[in-house]
Image (cartoon, rainbow over all chains, first blue to last red; front, side):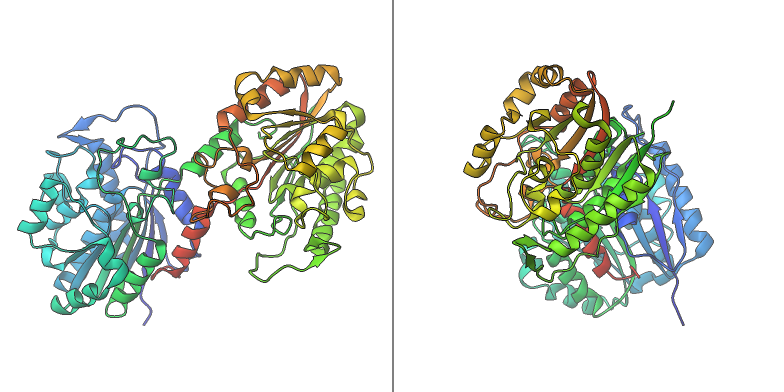
Length: 287
Length: 287
């Protein structure tokens, strides 16, 4: 029996309100090994520098909900056993992980590799890329939560690489008893992830990688490595501390005990490639 | 009359002895506006981590000479009025600029935008990407120089963005009376390039951009921004000080007085994209 992996190209940028996520998604696709399974692309408007309106406190909510519907339709068309998603901002995981929850229920664990827990709501922050894990649990905007038929039990979540959560986030994590691993724990003793898998009887694993979990001095295609940024430009939220090797080791450890069924790579902001693309367009002899 | 611009993809990495130049070239092509002119690709072996042998004091000389021959043949096939080159290391300009010298002779000026003058020989340094402008003038390895039928008169060269040349380079620039513009001059008063164009009666312009002329803290896909580098890893040679805007302004100034006929973009080392590509290949569900 061969399983069917759907590859979903999802260049959503409105959830993070940052146009370069669009090119980030295209480049993930360009750099990846070829797939012999089905590939679908969620239609997303080309980036614009026009300000995005807030609806119900959420930036560009109408576009986001339309993209969510389209993603769910494309996934439904294939009914895949497993899904790979090339974001786009972190919100791209909502429809795919909702599908995997329907399919695997309580046997599904979610390994969320991220500096941030993404459990905020419109009350705390307008950009929905920070709402996505909360929506999978069932908290936050009703139109996001409506896409999650099978809610994610918080005990089935491990957030790895997280540090220095905001007060709201820390309270949410504590009140929902969500397991976390600090960057130091990931680096030195990734066995916590194995204990969590055994304790929760997890058989299938959905992995979400927010690239901003990586140290921005070593991997510069992330928010916190924006060229020319000021020290306090990002509200002093946590910045990544892991290396690519740390992330791969953690995933190897986790998938030695489970069947991987979901993989999202999100928040790729390839500043150099965007600046180079614009430079190339402005040079003589290029058209 | 429409002029014919050949676009040459030249992923040479042996001239800089650094495998990531190969992906750098492919990405330049990926990021560029589409061309409606002819496109050719110089065959280059896939990068390998095997050490490259020196012949006549030059790293990987046999491969370099073969690629040079192939580039010249492809250019000869089209006999283009103008050429765009996606390097690869700086040596990729040798065959295209030799062609333009044959075509435009003393009416051709070379605007070499680079932190370094690239006038060394095998006696000073084994990697031929630092020999290319010297070879166009007629100095250095006989098999490189043999590719230049019409020598480049040093008075037809302007090196922009250069600073802190090595002793050998400084002596060479002085003895050949080669015009230079410091990074500060490029930023504050690019009119020197106009004076040079008028003084030398330059009508056609070949532009070579070594991306390492850019400030590595703002554009990180260059040698000097290698992740995890030590302060003295690159022998304390000059590092870039310009912004992309500085480079575009200089080129706009220069091409307001001349017809651009050559454009090379070289020394693109997309560290993040290479690391991401390797990461993607190592992740589950990706094949």
